[in-house]
Length: 192
Image (cartoon, rainbow, N blue to C red; front, side, top):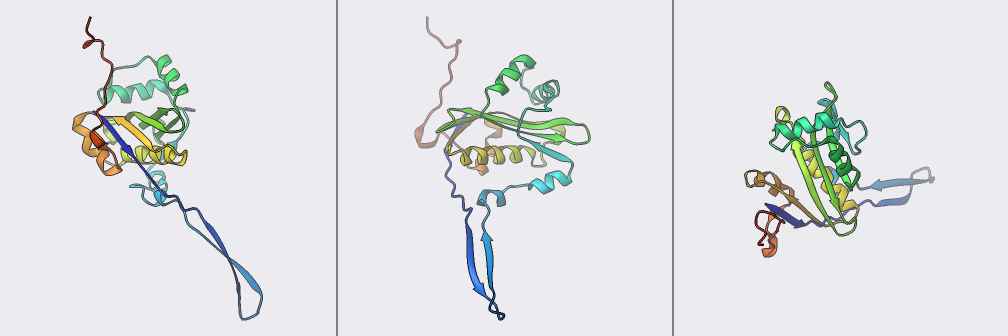
């Protein structure tokens, strides 16, 4: 099922410098800064992930494609040719994966492709079944969406099986918004 949403976010990264005087009449500069709001809203912080032995990665460097393929297969995806996975990664605009430090293997993964300006589609959201239920899937999707928003991309879509729609809804995704129906090319249904 296609999920789509226009996600709008206001980033407040303002630095305000105030000149004040103390009792000694010497001017002081006070800096106040606000972080992008989305960083505060992660369901699991970077620090918490790290303390639990997880490493966030944003490039395919050090990603063992055979290990990633095992995660794909473990969640029900078909086994993929690793050369084709490499090509897919080379054509990916943004990706995020989580490595479990003890095994040095990927345990969560998601990537996005698009036009780089207006639209993006999130693909291949997977979490190793041994690590499901602890927030890793949400961690990769939240951060991937944030990266896309920071690039100015606000029309973000993904494909999902019906059984996991509830996973994506709290993160701002809705099924068939505004009556939009996704379509997929299928050779099976092609009329001769």
